[in-house]
Length: 398
Image 1 (cartoon, one colour):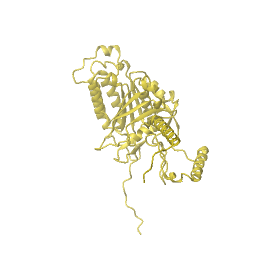
Image 2 (cartoon, one colour):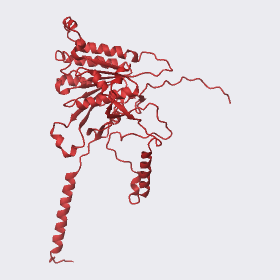
Image 3 (cartoon, rainbow, N blue to C red):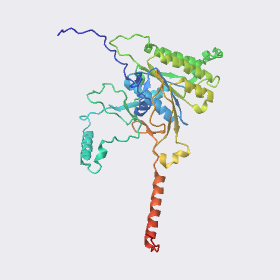
Image 4 (tube, helix red, strand yellow):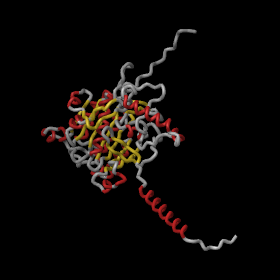
């Protein structure tokens, strides 16, 4: 046999912290929340935009954005945070630190090994319900929690989705990183002289705050454009953009032209489509005109709505005491495809755990049905006893 082999082009390595989608082959990156990745078909598509309609107080929408940015820091992506609600550096310092690897081997956790051995022993000793051993375990969490690796596959050195601890933050050291950019839009970032010389915007043009924000994003995203050539031995980078409470009353001049926000999002979508990056926007839908909110939802690829139970009558509902609010999927991403990945159900709720934000299927306890069935059973038994005590004088005709 000949010892010569045909030269073939080596496959280029995927950008860091990404993976191809199973159904469409689209390049995906994690949102930082495993259950949300499962809803979106594996993660957020590169070049797409996610819109989050905030809850009443905006607390949980801020948590989703923090998980998104924390995943970017952990994966080594260039992370951009912009807002006019508060100092964006405070948001960056409050990002969550990783709680460990996604996959734990048996040698690293002896307690887990002991538990696995006990579980396997219990399954062997199960004699009465032995037929249920082959049935899969029912998972309420979307995506069924963490999946085990297939047989023969080795875990990646860089986890696709990290595990975070909400009680631990990164702190001041993140501000010293070159891969982190903060955009403070309070006061439009203009001096008094610049505000005095600021011309009036013509119809169809962006307001000064949005045009300046777009210019800053373009400067940061320029090295991540798809047209930029990267050496074959270099792994391409990805950037993440998070904008909190976009278009809220705290944004300068936001009340002058509401549709300028729509034009800004349309320009930002064009930029994202040409770059290796993902974007998450949060808006206060209750404060925006209906026409503006509808156009924003049409422009973004994925639309999520949060309805917290705090401050409502549902907070005292016994059936919802384990959850913090409803999770609405108003639009699913359909990039380079005619269809989208649909979950089993759209009745979703969310709750915040110590180490993660969990999205689960809504299961109401059947207390009413059990009560009714038990009461009916008691009535039937009483009727049976009373009828048995009464003598039967009916003549039976054969």
